[in-house]
Amino acid sequence: MRTGRANRRQFMAMAGAAALIGSGRFSAASAQAGYDLVIKGGRVIDPAAGVDTLSDLAISGGRIAAIHPEIVPGAARVLDAEGKLVVPGLIDIHTHGTIDPTSAALMLADGVTGWIEAGWQGAETVEQGIAALQDVPQKAGLLLNIGRKGVTIGTGETKDLDLADVEAARAAIAANREYVVGVKARLSQSITSDHDLEVLRRAIAATEPFGIPVMIHMGATHSPLGALLDLMRPGDIVTHIFAPPPHAIVDDAGMIIPEARAARERGVIFDWGHGTREHVVWDIAQAAVDQGFLPDTLSSDWTVSGFEAGLVAMPTVMSGALSLGIELNDVIAMATCNAAAAFPLFEGLGTLAEGSSADVAVMELHEGEFEFGDTQGTMRAAVQRLANHATVLRGEIVVPDHF
Ligand SMILES: [Zn+2]
Image 1: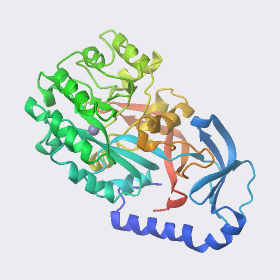
Image 2 (image 1 turned 90 degrees about the vertical axis):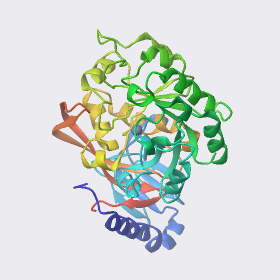
Image 3 (image 1 turned 45 degrees about the vertical axis):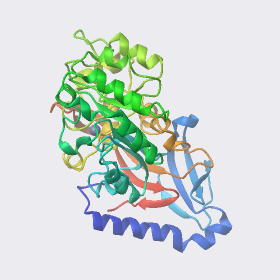
């Protein structure tokens, strides 16, 4: 289990050693037996396939080969998962994993096998983000900030409306289709001043030739949330859905605003986006869940500093969702198949279906007394906590038990 921030060099050395063990020692024998790795005795949960069963899971050639109650490993490497959850590798659609080079390894240690850099870079700085993505082991893409200079000029990237530059964004997307999977528009008044609607219109315009989504950062906007949501299309994403007022997802009486239900009805995706400041209020999250308005996806809004503060890690966000009374299988779905469905980049991922890439998180569900913080400093008591135990990426154990 994680005891703190792993030193990147130590971590990569251990991950590398694990990969060598996985690919070297057993490969000849397992070729005969058919399996490279068998994850034994866990509770296999694959919401995409409706699977929740005590079972073994076999991996061969980097792909899921079988899920069966009793798989004879033969010469395959065995990963003991007794008492643990065996779930698809987690997918985090809102991170800032390109800022610090330690991010990818730290996320991998938390079971994250796919992630999105959500809008740090704009058209003028996109190359930096793409360069960072070259080195990461996971499947990863980025959302281009509609602000031409991204967040490199500090928060407030579209205060000057001229910086919300449709043509520059389109050119940057066209030149980097492999990596740019959408456009990000951060719409708080502190970022856009009073022209949030126009910034959103421009973000949408930038995506139109490419058929890719926009993700908006809601909360403390100039315009009412409903006016922003009314512009959004199926497949567009709202992040920070439990942000505090003004212009929260609930009205003054604590009721979900009708425009949010209408947006969901037409296929707009509602994403948790935990972060560290002004993004999650437990009372709002609980009110939404109590009214049946659950997030579609869970995401961390990952940064190194947020991770070190104990706020942003996918298992922590998932634990917070459990504490609201969301069912375990739904929590897993929000962090795997639902997230994968948000971007074609993750097509075929977020599931343990036979033949799919063997990206697996082996997690522990601890029972006890825990507490989790929202971003207003309010702690919430909980009786369960999820933690990652091991990560398998394309069939290799990349995160061992002890590191
Ligand atoms: Zn963010």
